[in-house]
Length: 118
Image 1 (cartoon, rainbow, N blue to C red):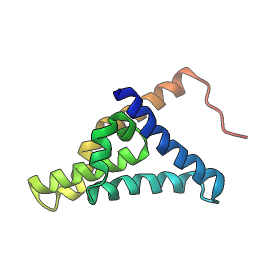
Image 2: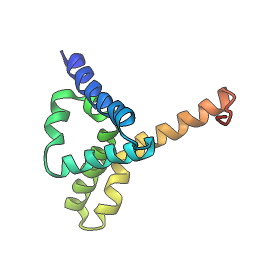
Image 3: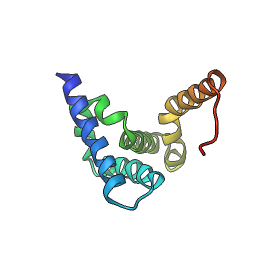
């Protein structure tokens, strides 16, 4: 049942993104920023945590999940070390994911022949 919940919630997030691409003039980069910001804002007002508890990876893997992780890390770090944590907490919370993205992108570039889009 966990897989079904994750699939449904992740699918809904993707459908929202696709609708934004198809029905608005927003460019992909702006939609990315919108999703990350919404994830952080929804966590800040307490609405994203129940979604994460319900859907697990279906809510944490898409882009709003990255915003959620940034906000959650910043909030936790502020509680531990004070205002300085607002700047360091998000980076600590997302460091593994960012590092993995960089490493896998580098390995892909080594294995495959990257070309500029024409």
